Length: 192
Image (cartoon, rainbow, N blue to C red; front, side, top):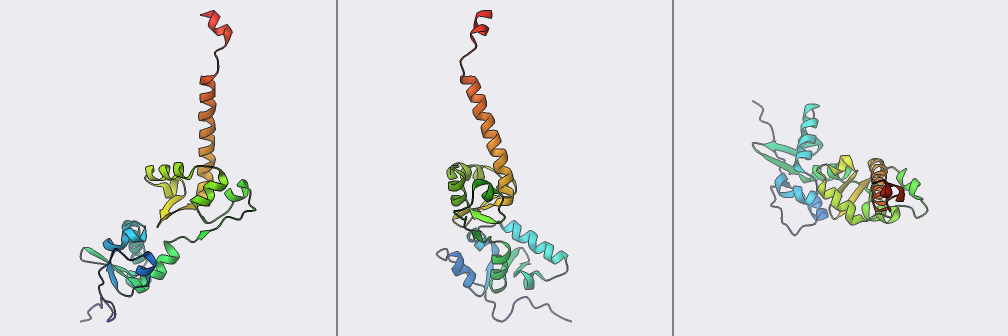
């Protein structure tokens, strides 16, 4: 009878320490509980679990491909396999905006940018956008903005569509306010 090998000889269960940075965690060699490290990874553990299930459904080993496995009721992360997978699949590489780009050129770009750079160039308040992101249950798909570590990342392909809708809604709101603030027509006053 063949017994499935669960851990390699060099895989040791390591207790996560809250003083570690993300880079320090990804440099560790060992096995961690997913529930302990998911906050530091800045992704929901459900996303990792769904990705693991998709890999398993395709007939591949999640332990070998992405370094995650469910044993009984606990999800384990094998960091020497998971770290490169995380960096290529979950952590976006943020691109700097070129100072030569116009607003239209920025909105036509593809890739991930920092919200702080985008908001400065598009003349919108980053704090207002961050508030909308926190308020939205699914800002990554709706707006193209999500929080990664300490920064807010902007997927420009989705953000540009949302930004166009946001600007038209804002213009309509300003026009409606201007109409309500305008002085009433003198003829309408005398007719009453």
